[in-house]
Length: 242
Image (cartoon, rainbow, N blue to C red; front, side, top):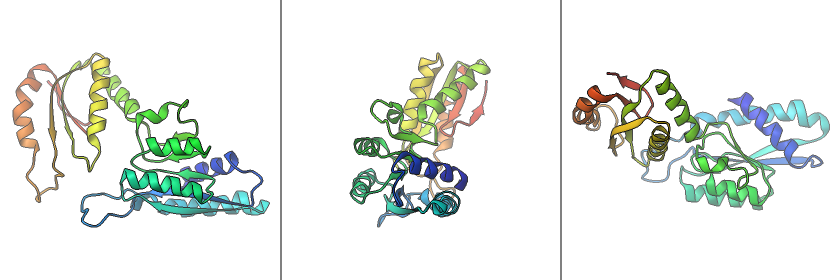
């Protein structure tokens, strides 16, 4: 992870202010929970350690020998889009050279970055809209958008001549799979793969702590699945084939 961040930070420095003495990068991440939120999985807790190493590498090998230095300012989002947008705007006022992030959401944040000509490199967001470089000219990402992931799955299904599927996915907003599921179904249909059935669950399922939603979903769909195609889970793992 840190080697990727090293490349991103180097790009930001060269993109922005080549004659500056000090550079500050805004690091937009979700690593904490709001009060009474017990479900947010805080992806930033597993990612954030890398940025410290990457900044040290950039300073030691690139900037310090030339009389420059790089710093980063952390902007916590708690996984909330409204807070993420606010943090993005606030960092502009603090004179940052560019952004690493944001995390789960990036459409409105990317527009702010474009308006102020700041490079924004997201390591987590998969919103498809930000691929339009006419609207998001300064935005880039290291994680593929939902459409690209869905096209890869469609190509895999075609490889094995699977043209009908039953699709199961979580529409719980905590995990954000609902939007990805809708994108996947749209891509499958446009690729000539028919979604004959779909099922959803809206609970955050923890083994032995919540009622398991999967037996009922399989019970309600297995007959048509066995006759007509395969069963797909939101994780894109193929569970069974005719």
